[in-house]
Amino acid sequence: MLTETQAQKLARKENGRNQRIKLFRNNIGVARYVNKKTGKVRSVRYGVGGKGGADEIGFVVEAVTPEWYEKHKGKKVAIFLAIEWKRAGKDRTDAMRKKMQGLFRQGITNFGGRSGIATCAADVRRIAGLDE
Image (cartoon, rainbow, N blue to C red):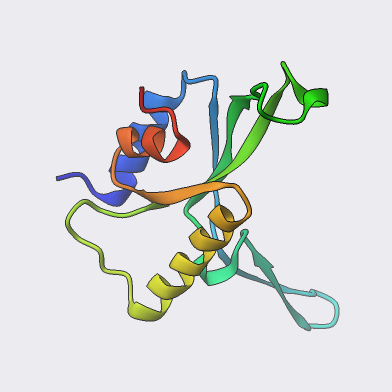
């Protein structure tokens, strides 16, 4: 069984040639910087979505269909995509973080994006809506 990190690397390799999916690693945390002159510590938060943010964020490219607004016909749009990685069969996420991750994914889908939990490259394509 692959670890979460191994599954992510394999999926990036398998989906890397897919021109319709673009994902970026979304590390979340806090960096602390010390001013060498004053000794003052400054904290900077990074990552999208805070503690509930997805492991990877990006977009999937879709063609605009005739059902969409007439002025957009024939154009392509990027739809926000958020992927939360889990190790197949072993989710060690604590209850509070799991709740926050669920709220983040729900927020993405509520506004028209695509979001879900993946354990392999095929899951990413399914979440992106590309499973042919």
